[in-house]
Image 1: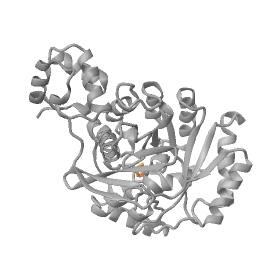
Image 2 (image 1 turned 30 degrees about the vertical axis):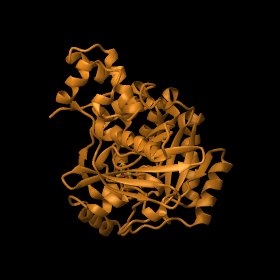
Image 3 (image 1 turned 180 degrees about the horizontal axis):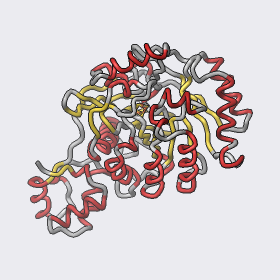
Length: 386
Ligand code: SF4
């Protein structure tokens, strides 16, 4: 088995080149060919020494995940389903807008966090993606769309780690992928344009702030521990006070001076004025009344089969947003994209597989509580952020 060069950030590629007896600057050349130009044929890398071009095919290859399907929505959103083996699949979604092109990327096949509102969470956890499988989604989409559009201009301007999986539970594979997204000799995206979304893995939020601070979005979904523990089981391990403290520690490292909280609007569950008031008190009273500099992104819930949940109606979402805004908190309501291709949280992959005993477990939870809290997110994301 030869090395997949998508697995390396520049440092890793330099180490690989040194192992081959090559100078480190060869790594920069390779990195540019791979990520800036999308070239996978070593013979075409014309500024590499001929001896290296001859050596590489025996020890290395460049490959992203095989594509199982592609769907184009009428609004320009495109969703790819990638084969990760053993009957598993992950997806990436490209969302074009007038001033940007956002790619939502998966980090794991399935997810172990098991949020009750998430279709990926219902599938259970299969495995972590490798760095090559994570960055390969960007590599594939960027260069496929450039070729289709016959352009050398950047197509993906923003990346959000909000597809399947909890990225901070696949930290070691995630960070080299992030570094490649940011590196000037690769994709050169600014830290503001790369967002990691987390359900609240507190120790890894701290590490990310030190290792590779990018924009951070936190899936909040509830204003108190009782409700949040019900919706996001990880809250039992890292309750709100710890999570908000980690957010505050992250802020000095963040590329913007605020964090984004994602909040999925679930009818009758978390969408009442009392929830909004509790949320306002939570963030404004933080740190002895200093508050936490944040914005809220309200996400209309888009139900998936057996979710048992419905989306708050428009008026309720607007009233909720108005309450937050009146309290001085910047609040947006996410637009729905790619509806006609179900470009939402793990939805297609969810149709392909429902693994483990997740369905049974969820059914048991439902019986126990009489309520089902499931979510599917518009336009790409398990963590619902953009
Ligand atoms: S919302 Fe995110 S963390 Fe929660 S189950 Fe879905 S993918 Fe996992």
